[in-house]
Length: 95
Image (cartoon, rainbow, N blue to C red; front, side, top):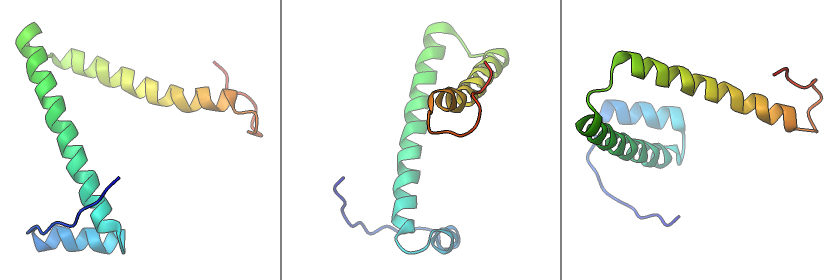
């Protein structure tokens, strides 16, 4: 991916904390990641607004169900990978 140098003004406290945690070169990577994450959140907000305009407000129960499904999906992926990884010395996961 091409890169370009920018000059921005940011609050000193959070920036210095990120620089200290990330080390050399990590600050730019962290800012790029935060920028992309914000763009994703903005797009998600647009989708939710459209959905609610079309179908009505998303209920707490629907949000809870979606979160439960996402948790199950995240836990199922490593288990599936483990079951098919022939180099793994552990016994296969139980389904």
